Length: 229
Image (cartoon, rainbow, N blue to C red; front, side, top):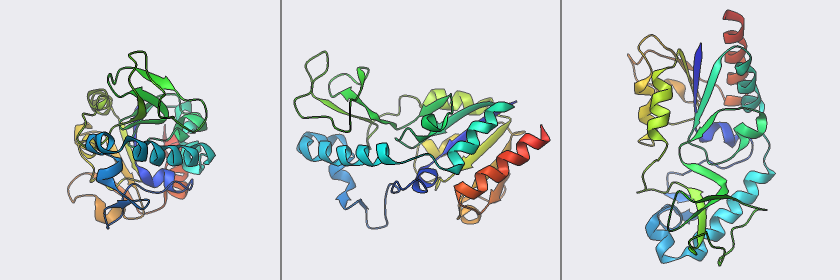
């Protein structure tokens, strides 16, 4: 059977990584428009680089939590694809083998001229002056607001094959990613695990709600699924 797991910031928050955005429009004290848009990069690349260097250091210091580890166990009996909105590598470090990063991966760099040129980063920083094979400044491998989501179609194709769809730690507010739940087949079992699950899922959506944090809710659901199969 095919299990697709759609994860958002809530699963990483329990590893100490801050969620994306507050009600005041600030992201860790920065205006989102200044650090998460192509316009912000054009205006002040040094600021953007500094911001992501700080976040990358936090990611490298963070550790997978019980929710990440439980999802690895799911691979014992299911074909599992994780589709994540998160730019950290905690799923991979926990041991998950098939992860689609919709919004990029902060531990990699990409060319600011050609997005297809992607590089591993040594350490926590991309330095100004570091360039790609086309002599263009390297930038974070992150999909910013206003940029296309290159792996969206791949994620849609995976969701269409799902027998089980687990939705974990996401507000279902960030599009186009939030629309992925609509591509799961009608017969698929859909479970939303989030402290605010009852408020987030729409009535008549066929989604089962589990209003718990990822670190406690995900291990429970995984254990249940492994017993049933």
